[in-house]
Figure 1: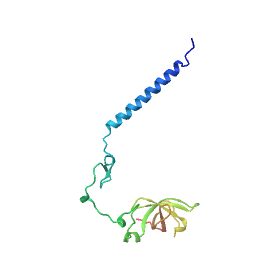
Figure 2: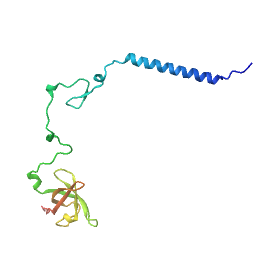
Figure 3: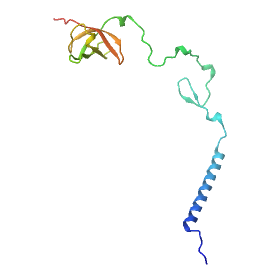
Length: 154
C-alpha cells in the first residue's frame, strides 16, 4: 500500500487557512449588516464659532461675516504712543567691557534688553541706573542712546 502524499502539517495548514477564510467572510457580512448606510452625511463634521467640532450643521442666521483685512496672523502691530517717544529707565544687570555688550532690566516692563557698547554715550557698569530708548532688533529689544542717570546723594 502506498503512503499518502499529504502529511499531517499540510492538513493542519489547509484547515487553518480555511478557518481564516471563513472568519474573514463572517466579519465582512457582519460589517455589511451593521453599517448604517448613512453615506457621506453621517461622516460630515462641522466647526462652530468657538472652533469645536460638532455633528450638526451650523445655523446660517448665527453666522458673522468677517472681512479678510480684519484677520491678523501673528502678533498685532504696536500702536505708536507718546510713551514710546519718552526714554525708558532701567538698571544694568550685566555688562562685559572686554566683549562690549550687556543687558539692562527695564523698570516698566521688567524685561531684559540687550545693550551694545556702540550705543553708549557714557561708560556704564553693573547696577548703574540708566535711561535709554528701545528699538526692535533681530533677536529682540535693543537699547539705544544709553545714558547714566546721576545718583542723588542724600
